[in-house]
Length: 407
Image 1 (tube, helix red, strand yellow):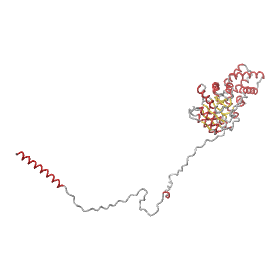
Image 2 (cartoon, helix red, strand yellow):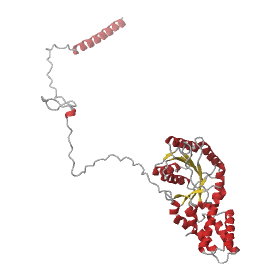
Image 3 (cartoon, one colour):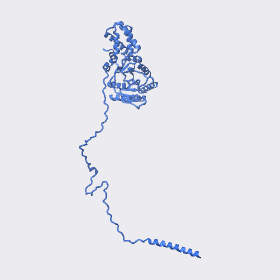
Image 4 (cartoon, one colour):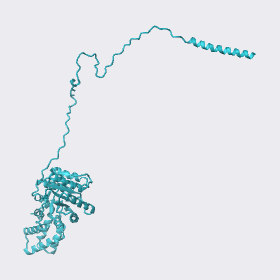
């Protein structure tokens, strides 16, 4: 019974505590008081910032100007800073066209230069022939002098035999008589009946086609450029073909030579097919109606069979347009008898029609003129007598011999 009474008391206490908490929380909450209707406050905004293009000041009642009507302010030049007026870049100047020297009499003009290098040969022969007694020792010395000058064994023997016979029969002894005798025999060896004109006329409706061949270092590209000057000086129009694609500067070098005389150069990529460039050169020469086409080929080592075969290919490709009128072999006169070895191999690959001897003024071995003609059976047509642009001259046997033995 007591337990029941105790439980009832605890329950009453718990209920009373919960009721006190609820009443306390209601007393803390207040109902909102009634307020009079509020009037929204008046807000004064700051002056608006001008937008881009607006006037910052109060607009005035005047017409607005367009941008075309507004003049930009002109800056006054400062006294300390000079006014610089920029000039338009100058257009690149075209290369000046030169007027080559006429070819007539070039070798005669260069005779003094030739005689300085060849004088030893002529004077040596005249000195020996002027001896009071022309014994066997003297004739052997004459042979040695001719061989040293690269005249060649067979031509030397032939010349000595003829001189011995004429001196014995005619009794020629005076210096003038000996000079005349020696001149006649040297001209006989050189051959005055050769046709030494460079063939530049095809006789067809196509230009004359000249191909220039030779080994490295003989001055082949330079000779081609100088030959262009010779032809232009004679009133011919020329197209150059840079078929030497293996030497990096060959095409540039040839083009420079051509520009100096107004001749156009056909060229291709470095390392390209030489035969293709030669073919295009002839094709363009025909299209332009040029008088002469000059083709500079790559320097071939005569010991390289593949390169020599390629030279034959260039010749065959060119002849699909028209036959070659001239194949000039460029030889360095200072190489002497080695030049004959080169000449033989080139002659087996292409039909050599003429020889160009370069650096003839730099050697005392002018007898190579006689030797190479005998070896190939073709004439020396041009000789190089210096590094000047007009120092390539048509070969004239009389002028050469006169320079050889002096006046």
